[in-house]
Image (cartoon, rainbow, N blue to C red):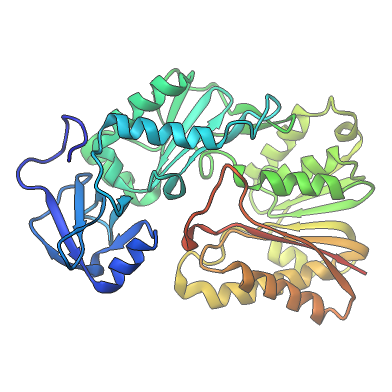
Length: 409
């Protein structure tokens, strides 16, 4: 069992035996194996090599990518049946991910996710498209020894004009020191002269694929932005934690009278202004008045006692980046929803979002409901939403995105 001629080690195949609980977890489809779950290891492992995991009866259990530097020791590729992992196997896996997205987007949308990490069978790797630019983001150093092979596969299959490499913060040092790879590196094509402009449902947006957050844009909120557009007609809208104004631009096209972008980042607000300028030719966008407020959203919402809005979007960054922060995050979401409700006029709509994987959807929805009940106002739950089609979530920890829509009397 090998993966092309460039297997990063020679000698006996690395193999592990794991705890009984880890066996059950892997059989259930969980794609991660942590170091503390390893009972036996036949030799020291090297970064990026393929490792076989055996069960207590010495039968094949799983195969994955090994990372000796991370507590998340193995990113699982295959469970239950031994497979020959070679370039053809990876080509099939790429084709499967692309096939899942066939027919989902037309020419009016040229920005979307092509590979969503573990949920598409590519653990710790994301591939996003922005028009003719592709962005590969790695969340584990285990891909670095294999990067040239994956790059060749992506380039041959998709033939982009440009490929940009993005690296999570925790692997940037080893990437630079051992593999001469840096965050924002242009791997294929020429450096962009500025942000990449792409289309989403006919609207134009810019994406800073070299230095921007994530891969340059929050593609995962597309479907919620479309819902906001359908609810915006005739309303005054507040977009808290606005980033580059995606919700606001959709609301403007949907017929909002005014939109207020609220964010602590001057850079984000300036990006929102440029996105509006890109779409001024659309009559509804041209008529909509946009206001930018630079402030901490929690502070501004808490201090605002005069203004009322007909539509409020609360889309904060993750409030629980680790399990220990979960309880505090749930309380913070409840407080945030409570101050949001206070800003809503009669018949106003609150759109509360969470991207915290450590807060479950039931916990988040309950927090928003509690805030609405505590307000003493009658309310209607319009909808709850999760992941878009190009952001599948196939295991519990992957379900990070959720949103609730409420109408208050």
